[in-house]
Image 1 (cartoon, rainbow, N blue to C red):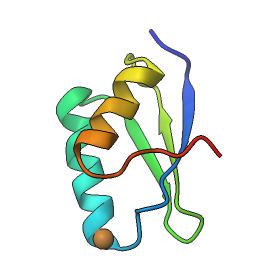
Image 2 (image 1 turned 90 degrees about the horizontal axis):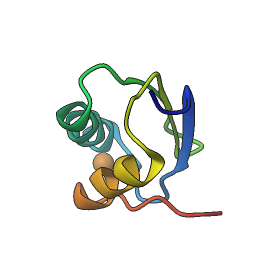
Image 3 (image 1 turned 135 degrees about the vertical axis):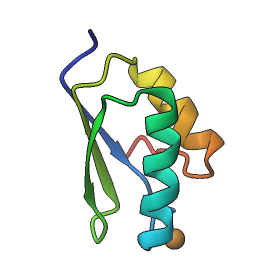
Image 4 (image 1 turned 180 degrees about the horizontal axis):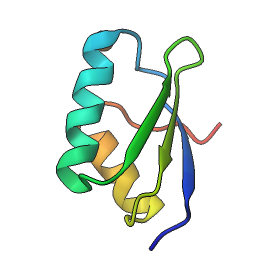
Length: 70
Ligand SMILES: [Cu+2]
């Protein structure tokens, strides 16, 4: 099991379509992950995922939402 909560800043996430695409991409990788979106803050919190930060970041990047390290 990976760390319980992982935070990502997603500068390109702006609307409900983005949230849907990101949810699909993460759940394809890890169906058990719980996602908390802060759309205005462009922030995603992934809870309870067994995947590493690197794996989650790769899935986000592949979906078109590369996390920034800021
Ligand atoms: Cu969008």
